[in-house]
Length: 407
Image (cartoon, rainbow, N blue to C red; front, side, top):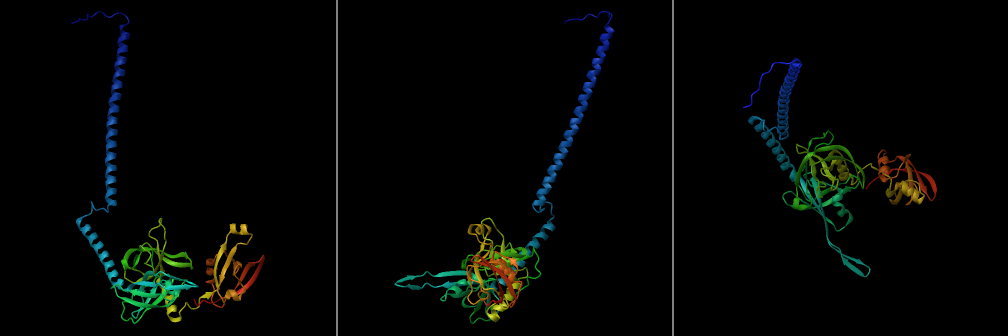
């Protein structure tokens, strides 16, 4: 082993000792700092772990809430919730059982026939359209849509059949139809004691109320199908080929064949006549129904008069809009270009002709028939309105006296 010899201190050794003491002090401070940092690091780690634990607990709570809080719900609360769901389902089942017999399938059939055209003869194919209807009265009056029975109006040899919920079939006749509101009234021949629907009111409906649609989507095969939703909107202005109509919007599924069927509330009362849906691959859950208060008013008129009494008419039947681009291209003023006028109508009496361009109606600029119809609705039968129109390079004026529209 190597040995070290102790020697006496020489001059200057005091400075070395002082330097050594300073170095030791610095080393001590360094280790003190390291110890402090280690302590703070452990504290930060503990805080971090505590925060992670709290976050995980929060996420778990959110999952529980998303799942309906089932995990933390007591057995008593769970049983109560299940009971409530069963009661709601039973209530809908009860309503459907009561209303379904009042909803029928309406079939219009056009038989095949031989048509002669000069020296030629050909056989037409039979055609059938189906929709739904609501039994209005026990003696056989049935409400449906005008477009459901349109074949019966177009073809003299067409016939209407009503198929009841129990499968029975009866012939029906068309009493009257109104294209503007898309409503029609049928009469089942020789009927009595039919299960008439209970009519409710659409005046006080609220968005969010239960709405149940009953009808025959896609034909007889799916007769009296039931879909459940809510009232999604009120007083919706829906544009169609017959003008703008005020409708109830619902997210209860509506499909071709549901037309003319019943939209009922949670008590089983009819609140609307299903009429249309927005048909698009990008749209789901937007169906429409004619408010029952409006429908009954029209149906009463159809039953009593065969048309909607006191509705004003212009006699302007068809036309098209002259747009800004068409105006520039053909050097014509913007307006409504008339393509058809009803024979003997108010428009004809006022001197209007086919190919005239209406520039203003009752002092308001117009370009579409819907705009003309909207202004017309502000007036009554017998009122006179001023019309400015364009013909053969001249701007002219006339006065049109509204007559009664008898359909």
